[in-house]
Structures are given as C-alpha cells and as structure tokens.
Length: 146
Image (cartoon, rainbow, N blue to C red; front, side, top):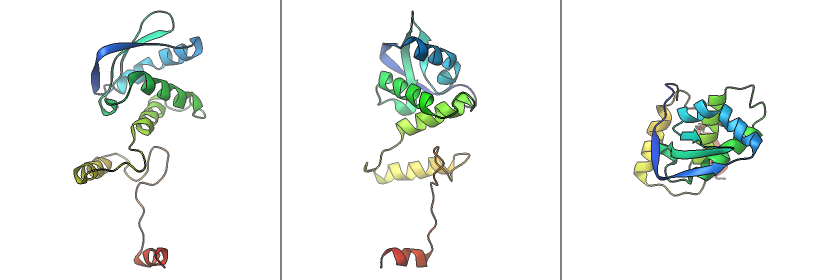
C-alpha cells in the first residue's frame, strides 16, 4: 500500500455497483486510495462504479459487499476526513477480511499468520489498537486456574 499498488484478484465477471449521490462522491474522492489497496474499480456512468478486481486477500468475498462495508466503515469512523484516508481504508479492509472468532485454523495457517504478524511494521497492536500479544507470568496463569 505504501508503494501505491495493492495486489488485485481480477473478477471473472466485472460487477457494477450503484450508489447514492453522496456515497458516490465519497468513493470518487477515495478512488486512488481504494486502488492502492488492490481494488480495480472505475467510474461507470452516473453514481455507478464497475469493479473489475478486489484485493487478493479478500478474493473469497463478494466484491459488492466488500466495497459497501468499507464505505460504511469509512463513513462511521469518527474524524474520517481529518485522518489519513489510506490508513482509515487499510484498517477497514483489515477488519472486514480478518479471521473471525471461533474459526478453526490448521497448524500451517496459524504458523503463517504468526510469521505475517511479526513481519508487520507494528506487530504488537491490532488496527483497532488492541494488543496482539499478552504476556502472563506463571503466577498470573496459576491465579486464572484456581
């Protein structure tokens, strides 16, 4: 994203998505930032975008649903126009594509996820600011099982 080109998974069948006028204008103003995340999206008529590709990490998701959720997250983030647009959108994409609680993972997936975590610039906190790692002393651990 810092290099302004995300990896895109091209859709077999491009999808058109019509928005309300205000939402269309917001997306239009965010077009370059959205493309830097890996979206291949273009304006296609009045209040309509055509989606040709989505970020590779979201390849299993519905393109329309993904873009609509990102727009809603962007609109609902306090101070979204004052903060960095790219950062806001990247956090939104991370939240939407994150592994949900309760999903069972294979050992290889868990190992890969830990490797990717420590390859990050800031591995000790999630996009929402919560810690990703908690250190418990042996005494703390014993207290939890008494």
